[in-house]
Length: 332
Image (cartoon, rainbow, N blue to C red):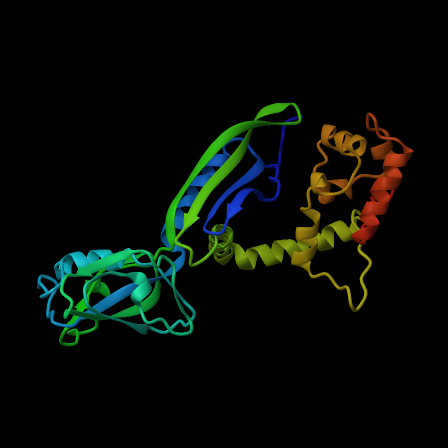
């Protein structure tokens, strides 16, 4: 018999994770879905995650970006390029100003910013400029804002900027790098299923796992906005149909009332994520029963007819289904 349904993958697996860096795997993807999912996630991660960026800079003694400063090794243009490399975490959604002021000869880094509550410098060692005289002063003020992707300074300037304020292109993306790999893996008798491995690094303003989860939620919301009304209607019809046919029975109380969406999500639970014995799990997999939804459509006789599936396995299945308030299909 030919496959009529796309098999669902396993849950996200953490390979390595160290704050801003992480490697994650998704196993059991239907053939071809490794690249389909991997490329989509990579594009969303790079372009659509919110972050913090500098939008304007005021430097004492400089009226424009092509100026030079007495007692400072770098010109203003170089200073602006160095400032763009400084990454911040911002608690507030409102634009915020941050000052930096140093005196004397020294190397100026991001650690010299006068941070306040709700603002954190993610790479304090980032070099900004060098003052070369003992009597020299270097002062600047930056404006921070939250946004998505890349925004040119021409796009967010509303009117003429204030005197002495230099607008800069904003790079909001908190992602430093992301790539993915796809490998073949065995699922049952087939060896062409996909394993997706995602390598991700952020600027530290959010963890690698948070970035991946946000990207997945963005993808879900995009699809949901397209299919939302139809999905709710189809889900309601599906639940009513299977209940009428006696395929699924869910005991509901006032405290444990599952809505249609929760029931469908419950039925998508994969068999290999449950605590079945190896013998029981292998028998179900060989029969292409891989989710709770597939399992509750079987009668006791259907299961007992499977190779390697005995009375103990049946008792194990019944007990497991009972924990989800589910039962097998009744024999006619």
